[in-house]
Every structure is written in C-alpha cells, then in structure tokens.
Image 1 (cartoon, rainbow, N blue to C red):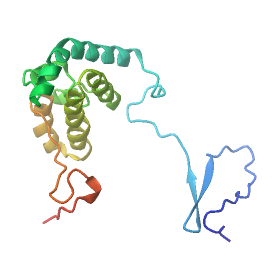
Image 2: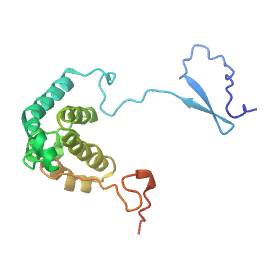
Image 3: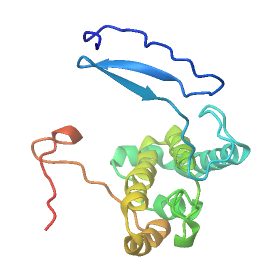
Image 4: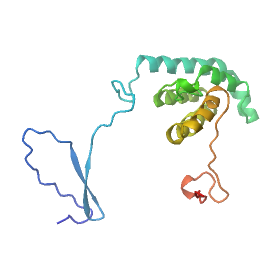
Length: 193
C-alpha cells in the first residue's frame, strides 16, 4: 500500500547478487510512489567531463582572451554608453570579429563550432566589464542561435546560421501588453494551419 502523502517509507531492498543497479530514490507525490533512476547522461561531444568549477586549458584561454578584449575595447565606452542609454554600434562588428556571436554555430555555417560552455564563458567575461554587452551576446547565442540549432530544420539552419555568425544580430521578443516580460503570463499562442 502506498504511504500517505508527505511521509517517507524506505523501499524494501531486494537482493541483486553481483549485479550493480543505478541508485533509486522514492519521491512521494500525491500519495503515489514514483521511483526516479539517477544516471549520468553524456553530452553529444563530451570528452572527459569536468565539474563546472574546473575549466580546461582551452576554456580558460578563451575566457581570458574575451575578458582582455572587453577590458581593452568595451571598458573605455561603458560610461558614455550608460549616459546615452545606448550600445555603441562600433562594438557590434568587433564582437563578430572576435567570434563570440557564433560560438555554438557549426564551422560549416561560419561559426566557431564550440560548446555551450564557451558561450557561458564569453557572457561571463563580457559582463564583468559591461553587463549590457554580455546580455547582447547571451541572447544572440543562447536564445536565438540555440533555438535554431535545436529546432530548426536543415533549410532554416542553412538560411539563418551563416548570417547570425557573420553580422546579423538575433533578437528574442518576450513581451505582451498584459504580461510585460513575464514568460509565464504570456497569453499568445500559435496554431498550426
């Protein structure tokens, strides 16, 4: 019989012989028992995964180069951009030249073909100097490019990814009159016709 909601009952241990089984943990939800199996799922191109707090040499070098760029090219413009409330347009081509606007875009489409972690490191390094520049790179890479990589078909990828890697900035609209930028309050929906 299931345990009452909010209580924990240790499951009966079954002999497994020499066979190793994944760890199991019971979770009581609405009075029913659900067994969740925990297992490590490797990334598509994973090589010797490290904890997020440890960086590979190439990741550290990438982060340091992006920070050096931000310190040299962005920092002198920050005060003026803040006072005017606008991004200096001369930064945009330099961000594309640096390669941070196409981090995960495959090299066949003109991008760097790097991992998501590289996009995170680029955003972090740029945001240390100016968070608004970091958000520009973040939205472009993690919302726009990532959505096309994940859900775009071959034709869509071929049409948009080369442009997003070479000079076109991707934007992500998340606003409605009644919800502002609260994603959970959006009422607009799409219907397939």
